[in-house]
Length: 143
Image (cartoon, rainbow, N blue to C red; front, side, top):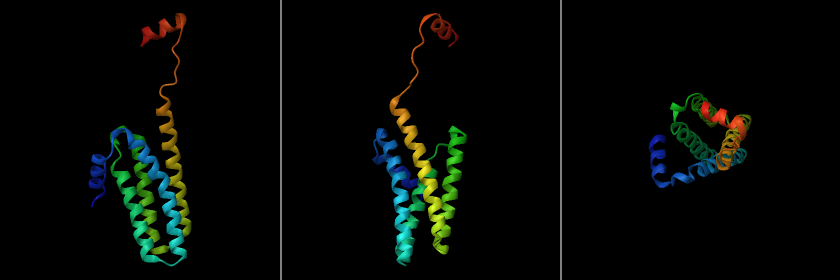
């Protein structure tokens, strides 16, 4: 199944209000999955490593394909990061390089932290207080 079709199917199954939470769960799970791949390499379970690593790259493909690039620089930068991660993780199939896995785990963790912070800000809502007095009238007329 191509990543976009998988995303479209998931879109049908997920309530609109849960999408942010699901994204955060996915971004929290990926570093754990990478740790599992490291163990599989250490145990020389290469077939299972291949399967797990492929699943991780497929998830990153879905995340990349789901970006709304009309929002400008942020989705373009995220897409570049996702593409970089996919390329590096694909290299691990041949190299079995643990340092590359650690690098990818770190990047995914930082992306996840960013989404968590954004989600918490959205939950809080606008934090601006209503201005009072003459300044309030001046600001409101300018708007």
